[in-house]
Amino acid sequence: MKPSGEDQAAPAAGPWEECFQAAVQLALRAGQIIRKALTEEKRVSTKTSAADLVTETDHLVEDLIISELRERFPSHRFIAEEAAASGAKCVLTHSPTWIIDPIDGTCNFVHRFPTVAVSIGFAVRQELEFGVIYHCTEERLYTGRRGRGAFCNGQRLRVSGETDLSKALVLTEIGPKRDPATLKLFLSNMERLLHAKAHGEHAHPGYLAEVGLHTTEKAPLPPASVLPSVSPGSE
Image (cartoon, rainbow, N blue to C red; front, top):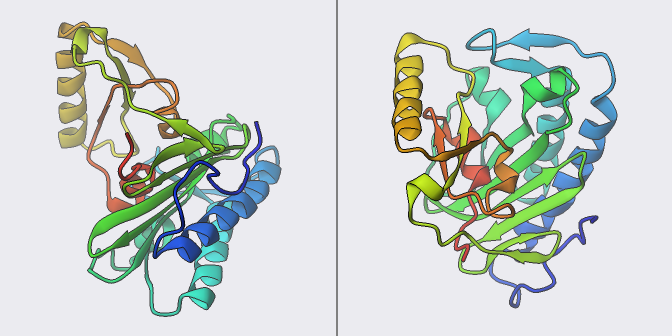
């Protein structure tokens, strides 16, 4: 199923409709770049750890998204993963703010594993108004908007009603941090989940609502990694 470019089933346009449509179109454009680069040779660098990778495509996509948005919305602020890693301030204020992860799954991207996405979030007054995730290789466009639900390629998504952890499907990912405190926290949480006999699975965040995933377990992440994956007001 290919993305329709908008959520046909969603209610009438809201106050941030222009921003939402800009995010959708930029996610699709960025996805084309990432999809082409997936099988090409890459220049790979590390950031905070040997598992925290960045490529020239991360920077290219991030620069494209920011430059296009800044031209259209010059008063808006930005929190972007690679800029933050390079020392830019990562502060979420009350101003309209774009939160960008240019390649969600850079480690997969480096190894040519096709589970990669571009993630764009938009917050106002420190609350997320919408999130857009485009799974580049499967051409799945996930969107979530405050009070208007979540969609995949225009089809409505709904969260699971499961309340029993032993019957729940749980997403697990350690993330790039490998310091002793993070590892201890992650392994402790994993042990608790195993004792609770929760079902286990590792999947991309975009699948959360679509496959009926019930909860997530992950080490703490900065806003640029977390917020774009949230679906505001999903039902």
